[in-house]
Length: 381
Image (cartoon, rainbow, N blue to C red; front, side, top):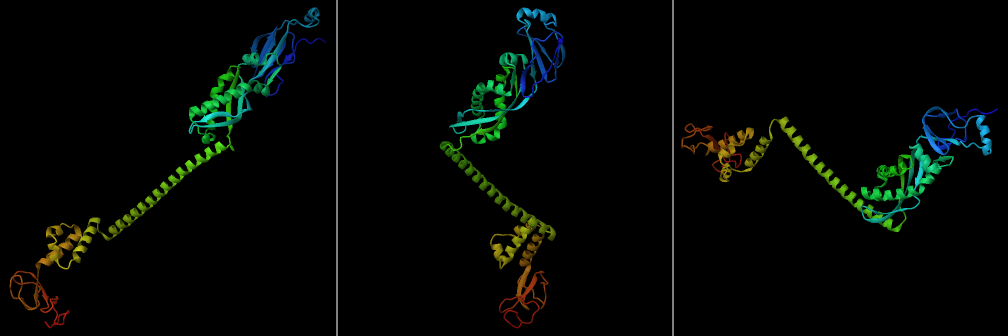
């Protein structure tokens, strides 16, 4: 029985970018089925005629059943109307590994120190321009998988990645000891530089990751450089720690002062006096320490000055001064030293001038108001 038509569909796996259907030189009316994640290119007589997206199609060829078989006898049973179909897998293929085959030589931008590093990671690729990818990379091959594609790109990928690594490190001034924390920035910058290189072959570089940087650990020069770097930052960290400790101590002292002030303010509020009154108490205490008001007056402090002390202290100090200048000190049963009037025994004020009377012992001068004997020397009064 002669086969009238074929059904062509993708039968490759998901790690394949391009797969050629093994059925060739099929008859007219052959059915082509293309899935959503695919495209198909129909070749006839060596030319890429049509690009098919998702759907079902009927292919028209010059190969006609029965009649074509008779015509093929002239060419030793081979049809002169050659036709074939290539399927292109458009899914994004991830976890394609890459790595530099040698160290990258560059000048460390922060310290100007020559270093060599390596790098590796992963990338994800997608067939973007089916016709370009098929014509530039596949040719007459029957398939193109991840391994073959990476093999095609290996040489230029190694050259580009190493060049771009040095350029990005220099442009962004990435310190060798800070490069791990900048892997995302590093990856994005290199990806942006590589996109155009892949697009030239119809491949989209969807993602590019630098997952590890191989530093020259063990190299004597690098180890000296690393030791110098970390000593420098250790000194800075120690200085910052000392500064923070000093600030903490200063804050503690300030807090103690504030707490003491708040406690004193609470005490004043509870006892009913102000800060100004408290200062007045201190002044009054100093005044009280003087043995005689005359001494205080001799120091140049006038009555007006004492009267200026506010609040309760003003009254207290003012009273003390008034008493000092309105008292008369006389021996018992003598005359008023102010106006000379005769004083009645036991009188508290002079009946003539109103000066307060303070009786003193005629022998030692001790105040003796109302006593029969001097409390100091025992003199009978």
